Image (tube, rainbow, N blue to C red; front, top):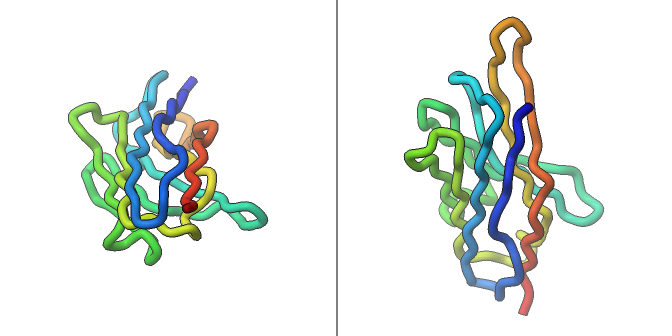
Length: 120
């Protein structure tokens, strides 16, 4: 069973930076996409950024130019660098994995979430 462990998050002042990391374990197959979603109070969960196993990245408009998603040497780990943070970035950030499981199709997993609070 896939498990996603998230690290990072916390309280930061507007304009500051944070780094979120996520490590996956438990059998992740080669064709996959890992990413970060966020959910602010009273709002729906939304995509922030994602990266597939080939290194192709996707960002929402709010993330472009401020956030960077990367996939270091460990293929099943991702990092989200958050720069120039704004109060409206305050949310619970969730790590997400989608992968193609042989014989079972596309399967997804979620991390438990980590809180990012941007406030002075």
